[in-house]
Length: 77
Image (cartoon, rainbow, N blue to C red; front, side, top):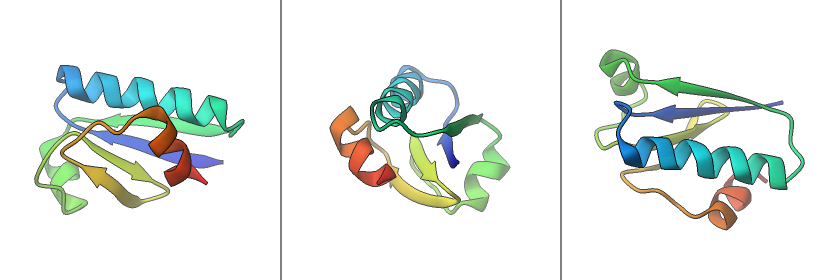
């Protein structure tokens, strides 16, 4: 199971990243757990300075942007 976390304060970009990540995981046929992290201390613990950020299985995959679904599918592979 893939663990996907969206790090951010809940802005529109954070919500879009969550939708894209969920769509990518479903399209790839993955079982996954999606978590939204808005606590600033938890975000900083990942070393993230720019939100939104996408974390896959504990590793920061991207930050400061909202990649398209196809790009996220590649990150999940």
